[in-house]
Length: 106
Image 1 (cartoon, rainbow, N blue to C red):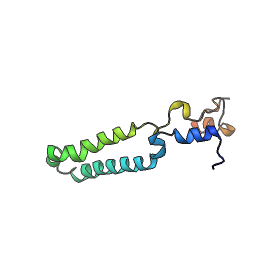
Image 2 (image 1 turned 60 degrees about the vertical axis):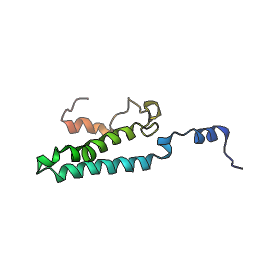
Image 3 (image 1 turned 60 degrees about the horizontal axis):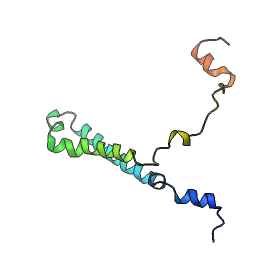
Image 4 (image 1 turned 30 degrees about the horizontal axis):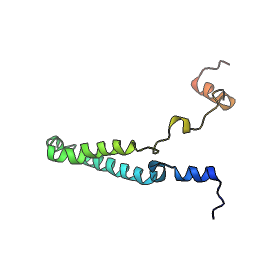
C-alpha cells in the first residue's frame, strides 16, 4: 500500500483533465496554430487564395477556434488563487530599476 496521506491522495485523484494532460493539450494547440500560420505565410503573396472559403475555413478559422476551445479546458491555465503570491513591498536590488530609468530620486 502507498505511504500517502489522505489529503495527498485526495489531491491526486481530484486533478482536472487539463492538469493531468496539460502538455499534450499544449502540443495540440501549438500544432493547430502552426497550421494556421503556415497557411497564412503560404498565401500571403496570393490574397485570392487566402480568402477562398474552401481553404480559409479549414486552414485558418477552424484551427484558431479549436485552439481557443482547448485553452478553455479546466486546469490548463491556473486560476488566480493558485498563482504564487508576491511581496508587493519588495524593491529591486540596489534600486537598479530607478537608476536604469534615469531618475535618481530616493
